[in-house]
Figure 1 (tube, one colour):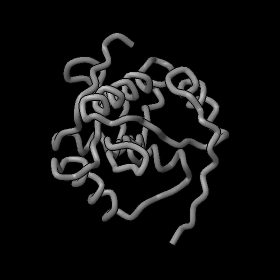
Figure 2: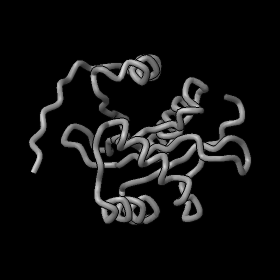
Figure 3: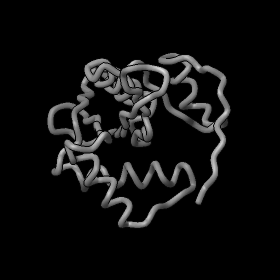
Figure 4: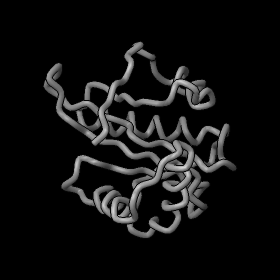
Length: 150
């Protein structure tokens, strides 16, 4: 998609971001309280936070087609930070048109600018559509994720 423009999320994007956020949560079969959504939005816009958000729009002033959230954090393995690409979602109408790739590439650029030594993310094993893209833009190191929810 040639006319995709990736840019930082701004205060004016809240109404267009929320359906993408809701779609992302729905895709993964989860929900968060409204207060968590409000807090997430505030963190994405706070320059003091390590959490950042970008959006992809269809040309100048076009509708939001996708969003990505990423977080910089320390590592015990490198002097520089790592960049965790936490959430990536594209509108259904924009899928297969290069929006996801454009958002990932934009995160790569931000990570390089910040001196991060890597960008990494997780996805469900059965998310074949996304994994087809991820296999083209990154390598899969073979790790298995464990977690404990509280």
